[in-house]
View 1: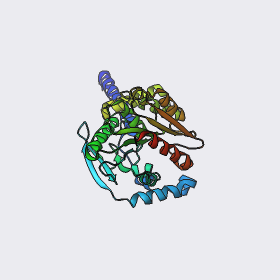
View 2: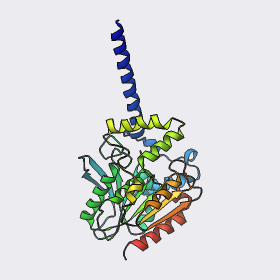
View 3: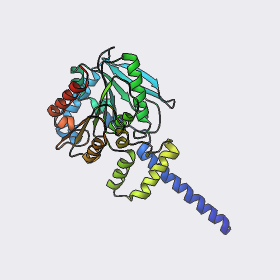
View 4: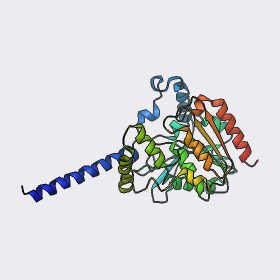
Length: 311
């Protein structure tokens, strides 16, 4: 083999290795993937004292009657949701779950409370999750536009007396990023539980937490998102969007959250141009504020609904 040919083979191998690393970073962060066991099994080994409450929430969810609904996304994807108890002219909640999760898992425990407050529910499958189409999870970049599409659909279908956008984790970032849009007039507020400030910030935080070099790994992750997912993680930010927000926001965050730091909700709240309330729950890990302090969170939700519903 000539020296030139050997050099070309080596270069080609290095190029293939580089793109393999880019693909791996993309797949780990953004590729559609959900484990059924993770979404449906709540054993005491993993969930401790909250296991029974989570199991009860799942049982309540499975006892509800749903209408299955599909709408088109801005980019042609088919988006899916389950609608429960929604009636024309009644208040409505649109629920957006977190990364590689589901509405049943993330909201099961709070659904009974929401129904008792008189809300109809739209439980959204975020793109690249469950019954919705798509292969790439974009950490809110595209999902914020999906949120707007669902809000417009709900406004046209039900003409609700009041509508709220409610999200947890990535779902919270989704609804916060959507706050910069011209939302339907019936949207009276946003509920954001443990949302991050931006895809860029949370990705860098996770890379740092894995004890990896942030700059080169984030470069590969961002390149993977752009090359294979067709989106830029830096194209949207909850903190930036909130500077244009015109509806009240209730921020909720657990102070013991080691995945999305509580300071991210504090930062989001500081950027919010609309009326806002921040409640933090001591001892609550990621997404567990409601389970740790059910009474306190329910009181905050009742107060938020009373102050914003327009009744």
